[in-house]
Image 1 (cartoon, rainbow, N blue to C red):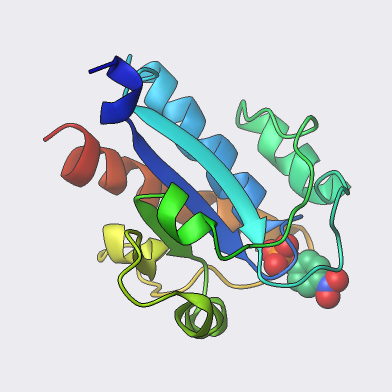
Image 2 (spheres, rainbow, N blue to C red):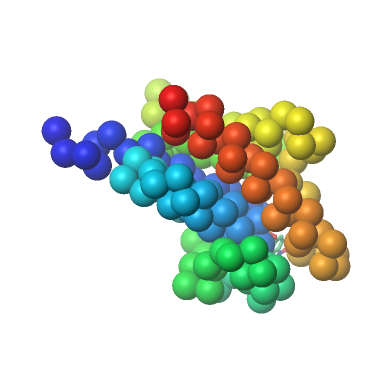
Length: 161
Ligand code: 4NP
């Protein structure tokens, strides 16, 4: 068996795939790297909508993320597809709307565990990662704080066990 068959595959999902889910993707990737777990985890992101397919992340998300050492510029938007439910072990939604949309799409018997990302940080004070798109800088900083806590929780409960 090759090492890659043991990889934990994680898909972060929001609405547009230009603000929250690419931020969550880059944050988990950075923490996985810092923990020396690159061989164990693969991370991707997607949107439930198709508004921003092939677009880079929102420039505000990129700027705020870069200040915390995240690399996001190279990412491109894509929409969730049915095959993702068998490609990924975990599909993690930013909010309840994303979660409901994912549950509608999920084929019966598919392999992915579908959950809210913030279920991995129950003490962070928010069950959802709120959409920052129509707001100001604070919203993008809040997204970073939340996905930071959840990425840490995910690594300690799922990956490092
Ligand atoms: P995201 O934010 O779901 O965190 O990527 C949004 C990005 C774009 C739109 C909505 C939310 N939009 O309506 O275009």
